[in-house]
Image 1 (cartoon, rainbow, N blue to C red):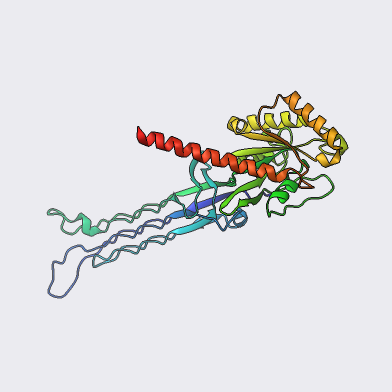
Image 2: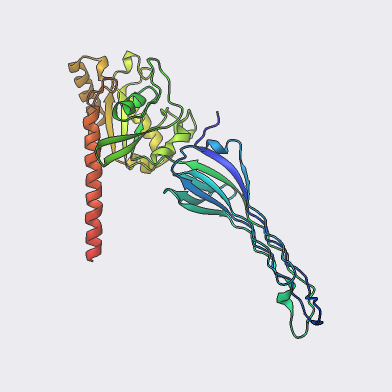
Length: 353
């Protein structure tokens, strides 16, 4: 399957135009001298971030992008016209990597951000630049320089404040439907989301945040198993992770894997992929409490927390019944408010030094 959050393209900048060898030939001006103009510069290739795009699907077929060549110089000291730049629009959140060197060229994180990925060649000099007292009729001019050519890998990392993670069928899609206007597919049989879903959680007027439902992870995801290796990167920009776990796996949930082992397995994959992911604030959401009696669900939750030695916030919810989901969103918003206040306080302290 070809995923739409990564693509490989070739960018070719325009060559510079050649310099001209020319001499002024006009009536009554027998010694006009050299007047060959310079060639125009080749066009460059730019990437521009556009918030109206949300996938890299447009690059599935269009993979080669060329800028215009500069025009050659002409007589009468006429410079060649510069080639037009090639503008390629990409989604906000696109990371650009040079395939040959594996170097990250840039990261387009804001709407309208521009990145030069291939510079056009410089136009060649005409012969008017080579005249001197000992060479009054130079017949040399320089050719235009070649434009840069690169093969680029584009990777899209979703710009979300909150990332949902967990095993397939843990209830992430149901959860995001419960707290936002996003409508990912949900069903009463086991399957996993194939593409990330974004939802906006509006707590109140002018107070909202973006939540991302990342496709379910399985053990070995960081090594390429399942879909996790393509989508773990989407969690890297988030500020907090909500780890959903099926509290009742024996009732037909995540293939009978215990809630504790679900958590441990995902933790291992996060650490393999990027240890910083494991260091992010991560709240545990024990889901599908509606499949058990209230007292059984509470006892099971307490047992899971005790076995894990969990020291971060945790919640027992039913995403399907939307029970206990909204208080979590209020606490997430409060968490972001605290982060903002702490950042403002730090900025004031640094400004006072």
